[in-house]
Length: 405
Image (tube, rainbow, N blue to C red; front, side, top):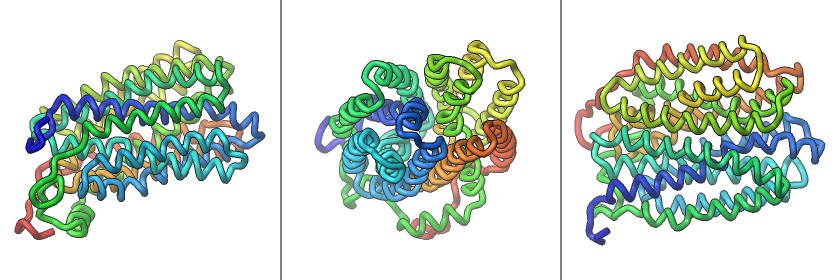
């Protein structure tokens, strides 16, 4: 890559971005495998573990807004370095935690901050700024598919690490693995523009935020993403314990999570590809409605390894397919100058939903001995999200003047 090249190559962005997302998302998708080993050894409640993971999602969302601002202004490189260091420290802290409070600070706050700096909002900002619009949705689908491959690859590895090394040592090994993000960050180091930033901008941060929050479609997209967070994090964290409670072996949960990751590769890539040709709001509505149907049928069918694997394949196809469509829609409406920050705000809503999904799963289980109520909430929210995405206006926003909000 030439020093004076105005853009990074498509191949470089996709390879480095995809590998970062593979590691970061792959590791976090396996956290549900630690629920029973940790709570049983420490004699903690499921609610205590769930609260820490819920804080992780909330921390990810809140800090993600500021990580996005920094990435938009200075580029993704610095943010990725900080995120990788926080991730490694957080995983080590999980292994050494002696109390629910310490576990919440490490597995929750610190790893949440790490994920804010190493996942979609930051990587999609690079894609949006470095790739032309006609390749943007497709490229975001590729990056999301990489996150899905990470789940398919990493969850079985994490399960084997726990089985062979114990859950403490498994976390230390993951801490070393996540530091591979550091060299990958150099491949996403964006060229500086003459104005001092990484993207041309006609708005200040405050103007961009004010414009987005006044635009009704931004609110609808944000509300839909709340539902996405609620559903996927509840399923990802609590389904292993749900299956164990139903008498299935721990290997069924590991294979189910891996199948979710495998089929999500195809779902996210297809969603990103279709987003180049068809209405993104309709794609999102179909995904959310499909999730509601899949969950309802899973609860109605007799529980077995086969029914679990079928559900995992279907829900996996719909798992993160919302991600490329949602972020490409934000870029299409508002442009790319503040894309990481605006995606961060949308993702904050996703993480509030994630917080409620994982936390309510633990609380309601401890109170009722069942996950049924949370499953029903997930179905209702899926229908809600499908309906509110339909009125979204997909056209680029019309601005009165280059510097006006």
